[in-house]
Amino acid sequence: MASEADRAADLGEALIRLDEVVKVYDAGETAVHALRGVSLVSGAGDYLAIMGPSGSGKSTLMHILGCLDVPTSGEYYLAGEPVSRMSRRTLAKVRNRRVGFVFQTFNLLPRASILRNVELPLLYAGVSRVERRERAREALGMVGLADRAKSLPSQLSGGQRQRVAIARALVNKPSIILADEPTGNLDQKTGAEILEIFDRLQQEGHTVVIVTHDNGVAAHAKRVIRIVDGLIENGRPAHLEAPPPTAEGAPA
Image (cartoon, rainbow, N blue to C red; front, top):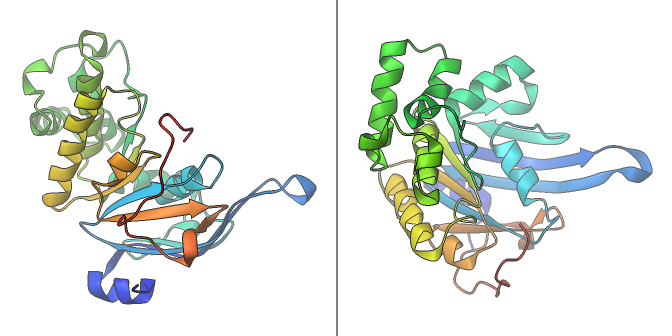
């Protein structure tokens, strides 16, 4: 199996690079070592699934990849920029500009139209009202909801609300799309439709990272990263050729 250095050479300039990343919460006897020296390289257009049992560190890894948190030690480079050295203000700007988030619970504003929900990252970025509207409508068109721009989230099905969340993640044209259990609240048919959108986005050149406990979801990715006790299993990414069985409904 190729090393991360070999994989970096194959991918060209790395979009994501983690070097011996450690994350410790609290200190002393109560310290929780969420990540224990994780190294990972991923290029633009990659499609990753992050898997692991509850408490394995996969959510912490997602938070670091999404610039929601920084390593205790080690370094995370996003498009060549060292994330851990950034101020909170710079980190927020990078997060808004380079990362699009899709959550299991959609996280939509209930009293705002779906057009307004999709506009929000652009509002935070200081984009003009006219451009916000144009780009939000374009993003909704990408997920098949251009005709529902004026609808409220409560007027949509669960699958449609997740499409809105994907449009919101896309509107700022991010470097990475991070999805945390994106099909967890959806039925099987609707979940499959959402995964088809992620597949298409990756084929169009987007970098997609999905955190999941579901082997069926992970099967869509090009690579599966298995996290066990804060470490990548066997010290390197694993391909999905023979995934271990996962109990239906297991905790994330």
